[in-house]
Image 1 (cartoon, rainbow, N blue to C red):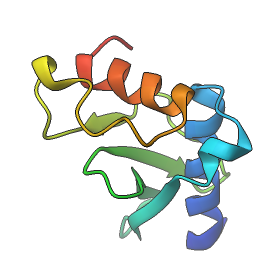
Image 2: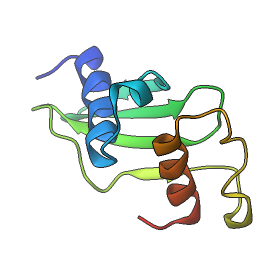
Image 3: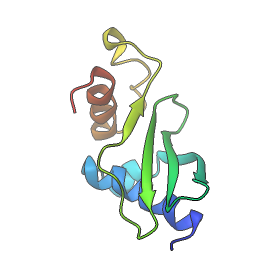
Image 4: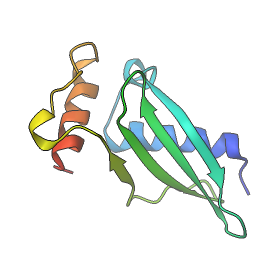
Length: 104
């Protein structure tokens, strides 16, 4: 079984691979929260973008695999897909815009 720290790393790597982000964009990602699910063989890891409320919830199994059916949440409505993206690298801004619009 992997550790909680390893699960956090796997979750960030999953978001990076899923959206084909570069190491520059990786610097903007962080783990807000993570926990092992009691009596189960997986973790829930909350990955966020620095200074933004957008979040991915990634399920990481004890073998290090991530469930591709993740959850993305954002307080911005579909009409606010560009909100607070101006300081982000272009690719990461595009990812958030697409996730906020629900085009995944």
